[in-house]
Length: 411
Image (cartoon, rainbow, N blue to C red; front, side, top):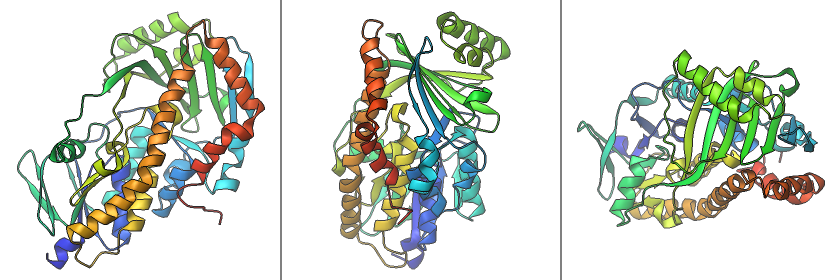
């Protein structure tokens, strides 16, 4: 393998993990090449709540401030019922920066994605948009990614981080003789919206628990909040990221208000003032074993390896942790890496990360089920939330361990 090829890395996907792993590897002397199937990133997706474990990794590549400088930091949590009864509240979010090294902070997903793409370009990293992965070929010393248009890129190894519908994942699993089943619908749908933030909620994460539904809100800018309503629905709901016309938006707001106009404020007001609404089903994929995360000179990270439902808010943050640990285990660029040596590195990475992410994926699934209960069982759920607030040391311990990862910024 030539010295030039030995330094090259193909990064499939320019969503969240892709730009971060590319910049981290560039710092270790590699020459990343980022390919993205979307020709031009648009105003797609909803929002993300970046937590200390994710922001610490972003800070390593100088990108944490694109989130923390543009939205209020989380300070307060408020849980209540749809009738307005307070189940619990606290200010533990206010102490995140002091304890963990970074705050908790919301951001609009499309704004974040565009900033990450710009960071890739500004770093001088080769970037190809509209490049759809179709095939992967390997030798003992290199890997070749081939696009649907027949374009070929050769490098030392490939990192697949192209999301929940990853082409890299499909190719690797088929190569290992595993035909993955289609994602299964969980019976839950989410409607997300962007609305002006009520003054009382400027630094607050709000949970509201009602019959067969759950509402969650957090600020994503100095003026606006992102919110989501999770409900049960027997009929599958396919996602659409198309921006609604004014007439469609008005109809969508009216439909939601017909279901939630008797819920406590600020929910009806936030629905009325919604400037955009998206609705999609929540789907589940079977978890992968650690040995299925990698094959030959290829490794999966982020949602390509461990897609998760949104109920714990850890998907993007765990992708950041993947980036940190993978670059930590890889040697500095410059030496030839035979497939056997790469496989050992990839195996160590996957065997370390898979158990943790599997627990969080299962936790997110359970959280969604627990939040959205029938009218007959919602008081049991409400009591569970009350007890959480009465015994914070019990319920927050696993959460605290997650926030301290992937390294202790305060040590």
